[in-house]
Image 1 (cartoon, rainbow, N blue to C red):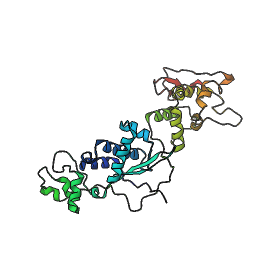
Image 2 (cartoon, one colour):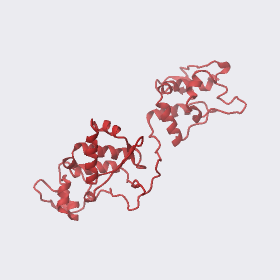
Image 3 (cartoon, one colour):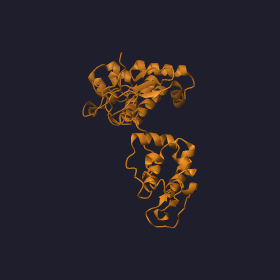
Image 4 (cartoon, helix red, strand yellow):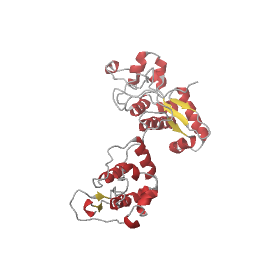
Length: 303
């Protein structure tokens, strides 16, 4: 039996989904913890660019949700599954469970109007279910406290496009989206692209590069050492291309596991000695800057 396929999502789905939870007073129906779990799943889908199911071990979710007992998580999860708000596939030993949020049939078509004070006020989903007709879905959600609908509630409400297509776009299992860009990523790329002209520019952060850079930045030694290594790199004739192959260090070389360490240890330095020059009070455009301190580390005039 084939596993269910992750559904196609519209842009900003997670935001619309959370507004829908407010619209139907879901916390009153299922509890605040259940709503928080749905919010976490929906926005994790968003962070993954809606390319795949979210995967969680029970312990991870318990930590995120502030739940101390596994039985509590199991109870909340079962409540959401039974109510039609959550898809869950059980994991196994060393395998995380798969999650994505769902829209129950009775909640499809509810408008995406604001839910604060005004004509479009929230109403419990159970109230919509009791109406049991299409008018109930589209207009009961705008009832005032006295249970009467205003004239403006009977027409011209935009609806929420939350229904997945009949044939969802398949996502290859095991495919992981590239890590999102961060300021640290940009700092490294900008510093690299400020190297002298003979070093190839990093014009694109491919998925492979993002993955490698994520791993490097997770290493404290690399994170603290890369600016100094980048400053030393142009002082090496070998890395500048003066070798038997004419090879010049590129961004992919810099992202290798041990490149920064080797540069700092002087492996590529002339005569085995590292030669780092700190340059200051220059105005040419060839400077390499330390993105953390703003210091000008090296100029192309120095070699």
